[in-house]
Image (cartoon, rainbow, N blue to C red; front, side, top):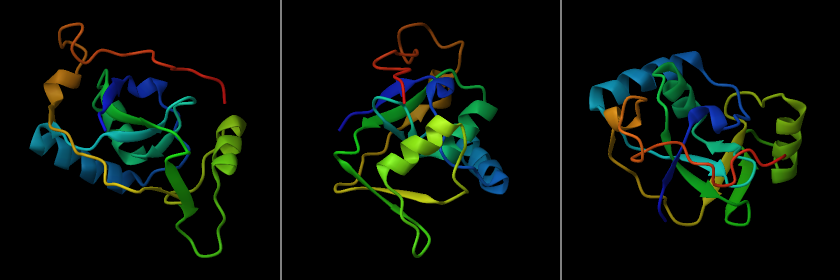
Length: 145
């Protein structure tokens, strides 16, 4: 499976984040100098499936684009992290439509085969990078929820 690139502002978060985790992840990404894990995104509505903390880091770093996997709930199973909590794609879409967010670590998205990592230099994700390399794409972006 190949990753593509989208603008962070196009992505729709569905969970709250832990600010301490964002800060630690930001340090880790800056020290590495590379973006190594694409964000999992629902392909039509651009809902973040996995990568809410990485999305927050991208916004803090003012990146113009981030690596993403565009996936469908036909290929991704979802469940709750907490015992007895029932999470379905429908509940995720409903939360997104409401404008709300689930608490931190509510949804768990599972793919049958591990998704590949990437090694994209951070400078390739910044606004000043030459047009056409990792620019924002509109493939299905902004589809209604």
